[in-house]
Length: 175
Length: 345
Image (cartoon, chains in turn red, purple):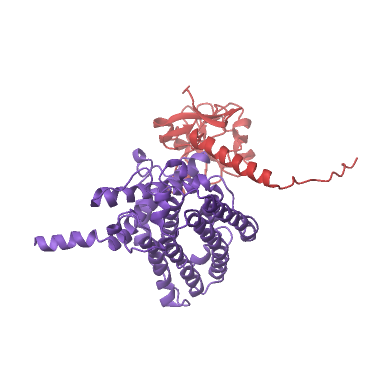
């Protein structure tokens, strides 16, 4: 059924609406001037506390890996590749995933598909690399926790919706 | 030796020089402008839920950011394109800067005739006339830039100034009409009691003058001649480094001078204070009071940056010719009525 055609009316401009409109705008401005609601994130000193389920950087637990190559096959960005290395307790070299963060799109398919939960997300997404080569991790690098100065030294905050004031920044408890 | 020091002191407190360069003049204007730009950025940030300049000096709320910006402007290369009219391109902004501060020589800051820069009975008309000089050089700078955006900006400047200068002059003269004198000293002295400020007795003219200050000095949401999101930087497109800073600063200094006139005409000048004999009690203190009032008016103008949106050039001109000129004329009529009834007699 087609929608009804409704004639749209713009409110008529009169002297009264001009005065009330201007005064109203100035009052709203004054309200925020007196009681500001600033929610700028002072980033290195504050950071947003992310959920544990956040799809951030990926970490490998080598002991659980069985070298099934599912992660490398499902990776849509071809960020994950398998390398053969000699692992303790195994006779032959085993294929183990390594990641290239130049290509990774943080889709999380590799973590989902992993049959032994050897791959996991970290609730971290703010990592700085000084050059492109550093973003290609080897097996040792893939097992390490990433350096996060903001998270180590900053204050965790989160944004919540307040029905009266809109979006507000509140401190989050670490845990 | 003491003779030289005496001569220097006498030269500094010689009213024309003191007024043009020191107290309401260039030096004070620069200090006020730096404060106002900082205040404007912080106010807009508060209203728009941001923080504004902060990191350069967290304890002062980022006040030193402006000094840093000024230093950056000062050390940037000044590029003069090959296609411009060189003499006008360099000369016009500097002339506009000087001319924007010149009207203060006609504004008495005290009622003691010894401290007038130029004693005269028509100081209101002379100072208002002098304010009309500097926009011509902005148009000249735009024309000399040989750039299409600059040309559009210069034309807009000419249109806006033509429209709003008329409102400025009509509403300013209505203050003089109410008191039946074109001498600013008479106008200020007539407003001696608090309730007799012309802001209260003739709010229509005050509103018209306030709006004309807002528009003709291109304060931020009304910087129609510059219009960063339409025509690059308008009349100042080809300017870089300190020359751009001069252009920006002269707009703010012009606004400061306009607000000085506004506070003399409508806010009672040095009103709660009566000048006493002596340099400090008779000249310095009343001048500081006028400057403080002007700064408060400038702060309210800066606050409006956070409230209003941008106007197109046609909306601005429509507002001038269809709304504000009738309002200014109504203010003139009210002033005439007050003069007839003898409110300030």
